[in-house]
Image (cartoon, rainbow, N blue to C red; front, side, top):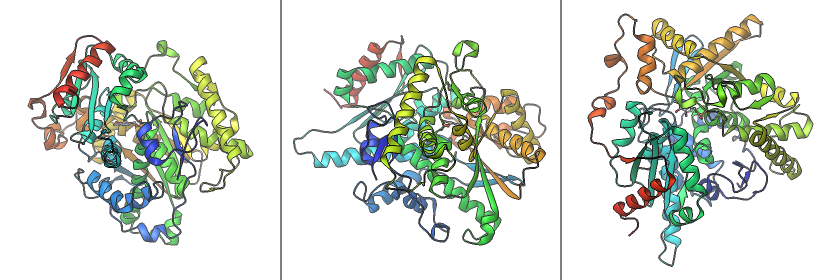
Length: 534
Ligand SMILES: *Cc1c(COP(=O)(O)O)cnc(C)c1O
């Protein structure tokens, strides 16, 4: 399996090259040459597998044996998911009739990004070690991962990369603008290769510094900068696994044999709290591979560029409020544009090119004519160019109609997010974090809309992806539940891992000004302390 760029200029990267590069040199994102089909008998063959076994089956459809031998892949996957606290890794909880929650927060940092980053950390280490073994001249391949965070990505990256050979990680966070729990999660990791930089400035300042460093040829060549942001293909791939896990766990819960005719009658919808479109994109791949999904619901907060796309055909950066990101109660979804949406656009452009989006190009068509793919690359490059220069691009009706066959969308305000947390605790004794609340509220709203429109519902089941543990976003949760009788945050929500976290020893370097040069100095000084450079 080779990988190509969504902007058409790069066509033949291997899996390793795509993962190590992150972003394609033409500015596009890597996608597989074709979407592999599931084995004929997957429903029987996979139904009793553990999460780890399922992961090996799914991942090996995208990663050739020549890239990672199966035995090594098994080892990587096993190590990546032993850090999870639940034996199902991503367990499924029934919350009410017809509504389930797929809990993606049982990893080290209590949020869904762990599922991908635990794997990506091991993958980086694996590829670097292999390169170093093959190296004759005594050169050591290393990676200096640099990233900015407003909370969630940083801690998941740190936990994914801590203690990995030949990898140093530098995470910049804005001073005083990260929640106390998230700050503590990052800075209490004391491994030698982990460096927290607390920058006097905003999240945008941190992001600008990181961009500046990546654009600095000399610094980049010297330290081999690497990124772990959500555009890395390996993150998307790792996330496809839990859609299959959800399906099998649902069938187990309903006591239905997944290979039976009865299983075909169940329509499974997924509702996904969405920011950069990475989580839900993995669901799209699972669906195109053949997972029987009925609907994928894009649930956004008030940073609603994706919702507006489905409503208006226009992908437009926020114009109200000065074009700034809106700070909401679901900060991990506070974005202006969704970086992974470009990947979906490529598939939509190609379907549209074929027959005006009437049918999807056969997923696993390996002979798939290159002309269609080339044209899709050109279209995406043009859209992205318009977005950059005008802040907006518009697509044809047929494109959105095609997308709407599988996607639906809803926007949820802070007020409704709080109401969702309150309602579900009161009526169903399930405490949602604000991100998950957005997914659940969106799901309920669309189910109600369809019922009013007399859309046949039959045996429809909604699975909402729970992206964070409620204790991680305690401010919103406590705000929502402060008046609830017999609710006690400490005893009912707070996991034991969080007790005493705020008092643990920390390691953090303060950067007094949001200045790239200062940050570069700190990085070099820290690399000396770490013993990486002299
Ligand atoms: C990152 C994140 C999201 C958004 O996921 P995307 O893949 O960016 O759409 C939602 N909830 C939480 C808690 C997250 O950390």
